[in-house]
Image 1 (cartoon, helix red, strand yellow):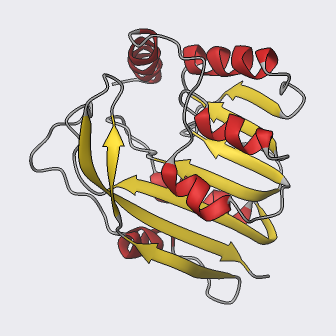
Image 2 (tube, one colour):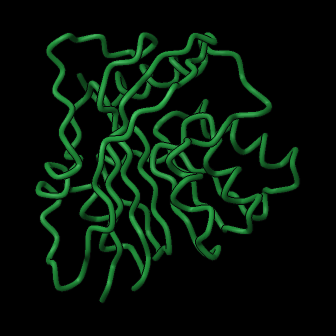
Length: 208
């Protein structure tokens, strides 16, 4: 499948769901970031924009990227309607082609999974290198299959946080793993159904 197929896939997925005026932030983001001082943040695969808006509400300057123009336009409209367009920059960006420019105090990658080819380890490695000293990379992956997931493959393998850290292969002299665990929570899907899901949480801080 080519890049056009991928863009169409994600545009169609977002367009098939009603636009929301109140997207929720991801639970692990609010848990990890609540006490951090605001700075510059990069949201990789921003989706409906709940994380970007939550961060902007708390004083962060957010660059939010997604391969879907539908998702990006919806987020830009929401930010403008809330008076946050000065703090949220929503950009259509294909992470398979290049990494966004800039240096950041926080980079978030929530559920950055795709059925298309993507060198995720390279993307996350580039993210770690885009951190300022003291900055953090928060990677939250699926650790189980939710009933509403687009991927219902019963043989799907969800790499552990330790496996993800190993794939990124960062030098311990410059980065440290602050958290690597697999907590459970009750999640609500787009159609209102609830289910217990597992999150794989990896938090890396740049130390030098």
